[in-house]
Image (cartoon, rainbow, N blue to C red; front, side):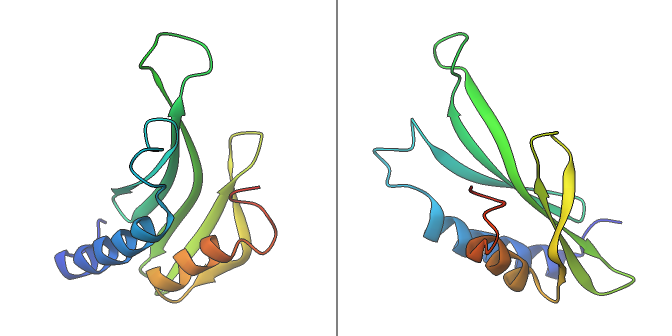
Length: 115
């Protein structure tokens, strides 16, 4: 089940604040940028870079963090993407709000999201 309209607006505001804080300056964005994708009950944070190989103008998308709302538990589960390209639960694995989940990604105590 997707997020309700109220929940979606709350998530969009929280993600907007996160991106405002973490996106690089405009002159750097053609070389490195960060965006968020909201799909269903999940928010995925993605790093965008020009493709190392391939056509000029081709963009490589590297998802680095994901949080999913579990309505039955009223928590946001937080995941990080390992080199095996699978999502793994972060520690702590849950947060009470989307702001708390994004704060875990921002803090990155174990160097999982941004290295």
